[in-house]
Length: 143
Image 1 (cartoon, helix red, strand yellow):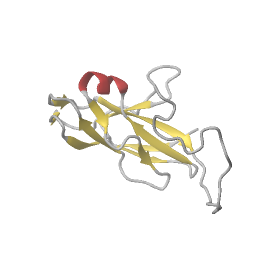
Image 2 (cartoon, helix red, strand yellow; image 1 turned 60 degrees about the vertical axis):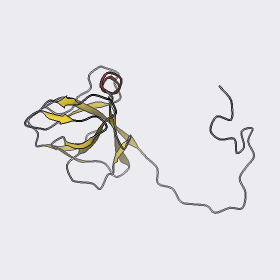
Image 3 (cartoon, rainbow, N blue to C red; image 1 turned 30 degrees about the vertical axis):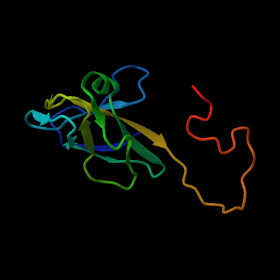
Image 4 (tube, one colour; image 1 turned 135 degrees about the vertical axis):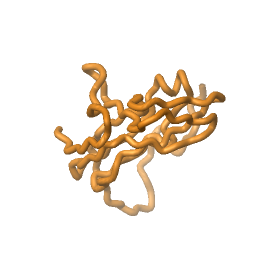
């Protein structure tokens, strides 16, 4: 799949870091270090603008290494870029650790995954089919 992209950042386009990676890493398009304090959040620009096909979305997800090592996550995870959005891709980063984090220009901050989606139509009914699970919700199967 080809995606139209404008790169106004100072960095290369996102790329797959391994041959079987599902996501491409996004970089912070900032000109100087940015401190994200403990329990603070900030919106980080990427300098990227995309035109997705009408049946695709782009999800912005945390990088597991940043989350595990530094407590940084994408606050609205996953963030969704709709196919009709034409603005800059921005990432809402939150620091869930006790320590400040110093974000550097060009640092990989999140990953993006492009997926096809279906649009639905509601079919209002009075009942749903029975299943073995039924209405069993959170934790209903035990530990």
